[in-house]
Length: 158
View 1 (cartoon, helix red, strand yellow):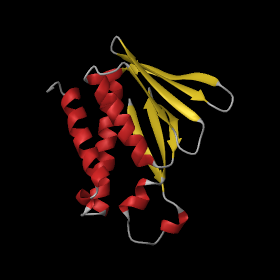
View 2: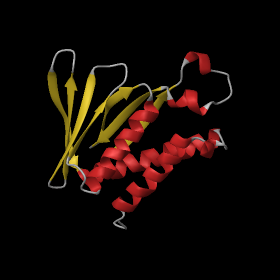
View 3: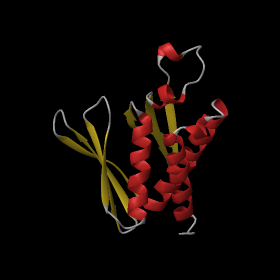
View 4: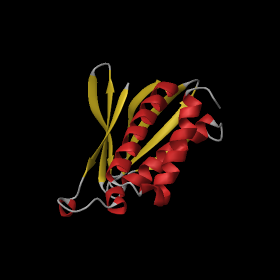
């Protein structure tokens, strides 16, 4: 399994110096590849908030604080529910507009988290390349801490 975050920059950002706060508000598409097939998993603006919530939910499952968590997408009526049971994660999408619920995927929890952490870390490092002062941003530092916690869980250190 592979995961990829695609960030869509707003037109007014083109040709201007990188600004972390503005960048964090951009639209993000999360793509997932399984068995050679890539598909769009979710899309949202304010992607920084989505990633922080996503990682927090995964950490809480590892720390057995919860068995499920919900993430609401911005600028859409989609709501994603992540349910953990017997080493599997089931992800369902609820469409608030028409009330439809669709099972997006079911896979091994550890495989899903490993793919997420790899991409989260790649994304985190790419930001630092664009802005060497990124560590002054609180959200950036929280992301670093989340990556370290999740990596430790994936590697069995915690």
